[in-house]
Amino acid sequence: MAVAAERLLDSSDLTPPASTTVTPDDSGAWQAAGWGLAATVAASVLSYAFQILVARFMSPTSYSDTVAMLSLYMVCSLPLTPIFLLITRRVVEARREQRERDVRALVHRLLIRGATLGGLAVAAAFVARAPLAGWLRLSEPMAMPIFALSVVLSALHLLVIAVLLGRLDWRAANGLPVIFGASRIALSLLFVRPGFDVAGTFAAIAGSAALTFTLGLAAVTRGLGRGGRYQPLHLGEVGLAITLNAAFWFLVQVDTIYVNRELPLLAEGGYVAASGLAKMLVYIPLAVGNVMFPLLSAATTTAARRRVLMRMLMMAAALDAAGLLAIAAAPERIVLLTLGPSHISAAGYLLQVGAVLAPLSLVGMFLYEALARHDRIVTIAFAVAAVFAAAILVLLTPALPGLYAALLAASAIVLVCAFVSGVRS
Image (tube, rainbow, N blue to C red; front, side):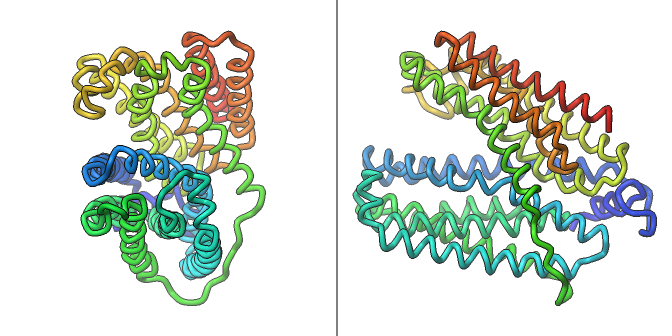
């Protein structure tokens, strides 16, 4: 566990008056951001390499099925994100109040419930494997229970990472996703083969998730006393987190949905591919913000919280500025290195869509701040911004400038409301 981060958590700004105080070490927050950035870049590279590798083993049809199922895998995983952030915050609170045993009780109860629900889901997918495969147009019925198993094990893997973040164990929390990516590539060499394409891909994912879950669980329970009291998550907290998450990810993904539906010629002309690349300007800062969320949750004074939030915003702005400069300098080279020459038309859209999506990374930092403070005003702002953008896009004559205006206006609504709420608090 990082020593600097320990000193930051134990500082007078972040702990109750009764705790032993130490002079704050501001390097702790930057160290967390550094670990998060390094792990995100490494995991992203490994994820890209994994998709390239499995594509080499498959026919174009099988690879299309695999990509579709990987998208479904993401759809099944994203709704869990706010719940894991709440778990991280609960661990931070227990640690701050010196209730380490409660962390073990929390992990034990959630693992039992997750494994039980997961076992039922895998069993249901096995029983209904044939009709599910037919509905999804898959030629491998056994892919369905293996897919379900991969989602369940990935959820348990993310659970232990959430607890490790709450304990400020940066090395373990950020090392596990890298191990996950590397082991997934290694296992794909074993499982992915002709006739076992989609199922083999998700068998590799399930195996790597099982490995990182086992390693993470050992790290999580190290040094925790037995006993403790389980404190369930409150329904209001869960509802607030899900509302924030749904509104934010709608704003991030709506441009692709809108263009696919209303502007198909632009979609075929490279916009969708450009948007997929430009969203890295949102994804990477969010991953760094996720690592710094425990420090934001641990802040017990307004000054401490603002310092951490400012670091998060500065990191997001710096990453976006660097990304936009790279895109402006060499959009064609970026497309060729990532998507290949068949998608070179995406280069013409890359800078403009990146400039529109980049402010959403700043919006994402306020999502973490709203979760840390149970801020209902900011939650309402997120919901209003999402509804506003949806209404504009429904009423507007389909056009790219209108889409850009709706997204920028939605970002402005959240940023202004979050700033006002922060000043009032």
